[in-house]
Image (cartoon, rainbow, N blue to C red; front, side):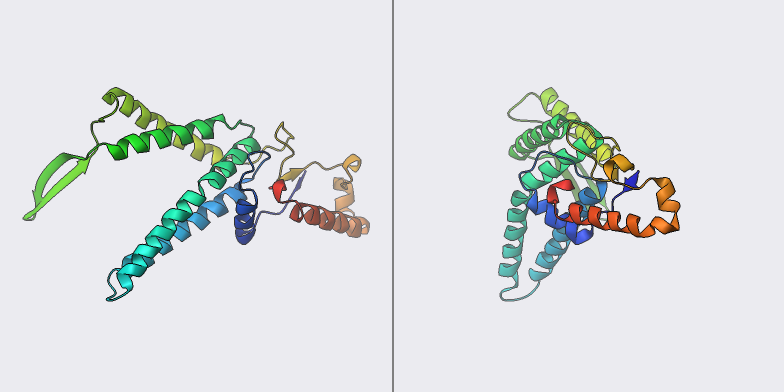
Length: 225
């Protein structure tokens, strides 16, 4: 079994945008988690700079607002490719797209209902002479409370399931979503030298040539990942 090279940091982000509407095929762990790191860094760095801008006199607050708007637009622009990437990650492990799709829909519904419900005081207190108050949504205005808590529980459970699936390794076998982006079967019938040939120094050049051709094929096919 031949293991293809991991997707690089920059490479993964490029494929993230190239596969914007691609809900087919498979994506390996390296592609998924490099993109997650990209998004994390973009959010953290942008919000940090925006926060600092509000302390700069003059045009600082205006720049801060612009950065917040830009990061909001970025969040909207990445909804579809993030969902598509998660679907392909599920495909890579052998699962269908239904779990990430249901998780996405349930999360959207819960967040809309939660945002439209007014915050209520959860607890009040006094710490070292400073009054403290914690607010949150304990009740829902548009649906029964039991349904709201059910949506919240489903959101948490489905997010945990999605996280676990994203951590799993690629399946070696070809499945109905396509061949593995990570593993390639070895054998003469597929043009890949077997273990004896790989161990034989006299065939090193042949093996290197095959490895190079495989890498070129992977690089030329963005949907391979």
